[in-house]
Length: 134
Image 1 (cartoon, rainbow, N blue to C red):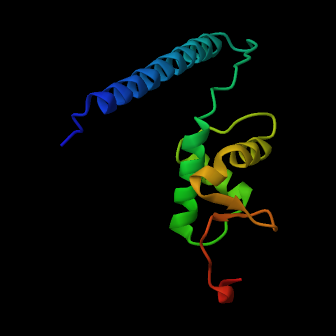
Image 2: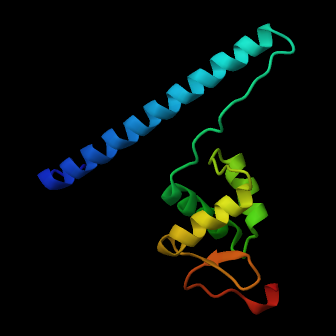
């Protein structure tokens, strides 16, 4: 059963409206890119320059990274995380996507329970792992 507290309902409403607005904006970009691609397909040799789609929300990226690590139950490299995020449809773009992911995790990873180990891999904050695995 949903929470009927008026303040909680207002908060949830604001969050959903903000999410809808963000998705609507992203959908407009996608529609524009599709139109440009369809036009380019009709004109062989046409030049096509598409803007990258917006990155996923940083908290969503960090939460998905945490899920990946929890599923594997071992430290995970940035390259492996990026590959898995792409497979899951979570966008992390930029000129250097691995560096973009590192920046996201530097900013919000700790709050999501993700830390970077000295070796550069990522792991769950506050969790030990069996020494015999490494």
